[in-house]
Length: 220
Image (cartoon, rainbow, N blue to C red):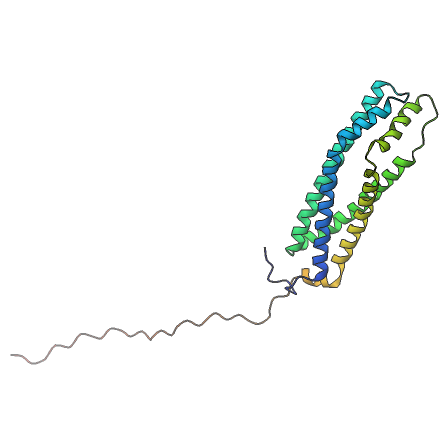
C-alpha cells in the first residue's frame, strides 16, 4: 500500500539499511533453525556413545536425550518464528508503515534481552563444573557431555549469532530513530489551498415556449 502523504516520498538510506539488516537477520534465524534440526541426529549419537563411559544409569541417559531433543525442537521453532517475524517487519518497514517501525522497536528490546540470555546460557553451559556428590555426579557428567556432543562449530556459531542478534537489533533501533527516518514516516500536513470544483459547462438560459400564433381577425 502506497502512502502519498508521506514526506519525503523517496525512502531514506537509513530506512533502506534497516530493511536490509532485518532481512539478513531473518535469513540467519531461519538458517539456524534448519541447522539445529539437521544436526540433532548426529548430536544424539555422539552423546549416547560418550555417556556409556559415565556412571549414569540408562534411564538417566534416556532422560537427558529426551531433554536434548525437546530443547532442539524448541530452539528451532523459536528461531523459525523469529525469522518469519523479522521478514514480515522488514516488508512492512519497506512499505513505509509506521506501525512496523513501532513494532520493530518493541521486538528490538525483546531481542536484546533474548540475545543476552542466549549468550549467558552458552557461557554457563561451558563453565558448569562437575558435581562432587554421589547423587549429583551422574547428572553433572551427562550435562557436561552435551556441549561436546554438538559439532565443533555449533557453540561458536550460537555465540556469534547471539552477539550479532544483540548488535543487529541495536543498530536497527538506532537507524529508525534518526531524523531522516522520522521525517519519512511522519504524515505530511494537508495543503491549505482551497479546492474548487471544476466549472460546469455554460448552459444557455431557459426560454419559455413561444405562444401559438394568434388567430386572424379577418372573416370570410
